[in-house]
Length: 76
Image (tube, one colour):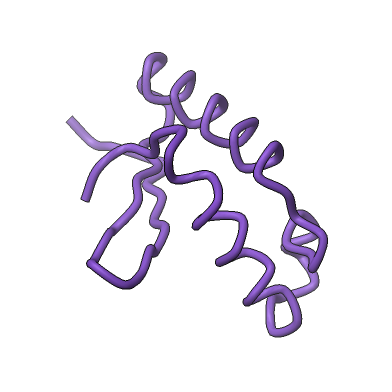
């Protein structure tokens, strides 16, 4: 488990495209044409939110796959 890195963009974009058909309609950003550039834009947003401590998005990586998880509220 770690923060996304630029090298993860291709796998992240592929994951989004692969799940686009079964995604909830409220996930408007999840579509079959999702690009690596869009993934990199998302990673930049994630980095900014971590810096401001407003959200903590990270990937869960295995040898064969990538998953994404997000925490939007942290209690101290």
